[in-house]
Length: 115
Length: 113
Image (tube, rainbow over all chains, first blue to last red; front, top):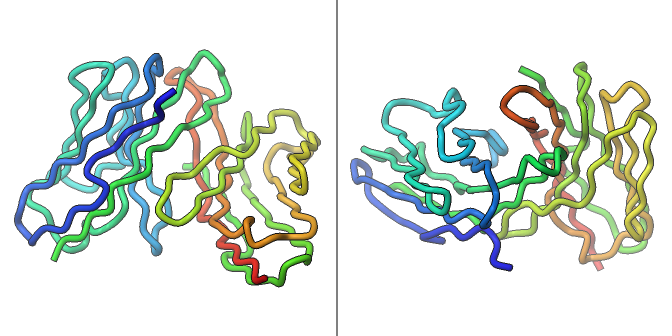
């Protein structure tokens, strides 16, 4: 079975540019999470969806960040405008509540560098 | 907000040595998960423990959930270079939104041949 698929794997952009990160969760999973990972702050939860509905976006740093999940098989995380401090690895993860254990299946991440 | 502290943050050992990584909190969790993350990849689940005092073994890895469900440990016997990676613990809390995880800061392990 295909795992969580993220794109792009690497993105280098200049400050002020718009960045869009994409995620395809595992089919049948009803939760989708966006995390950001840096050496300084570790793994931070940005936002998560349940059945395509945003449940908690309190981890989104500021209004420059937005996330959407138009359907069960696709989600985007957008940063506009991007800043150097946004440089990090962004992970998408999905899970299935039916197991009640909350195991997260992570994608390989999108490494973002903002110059 | 529940916090999980992991120790040590960094650990460099020789192949064949034993090691223990700790995950501590002042909060009670419904479950505790351990993930391993290798460079360039996302974290991968190793184990989930749900019962206070529970011990699970995965080959050379032994996981324990504290009796009070506030802490956990990961013990690796005879470490190998393939064990190198970032080990993350994550505490689970069941609420109306599901089973939400809080991640610790991680322990970065390097096993030298």
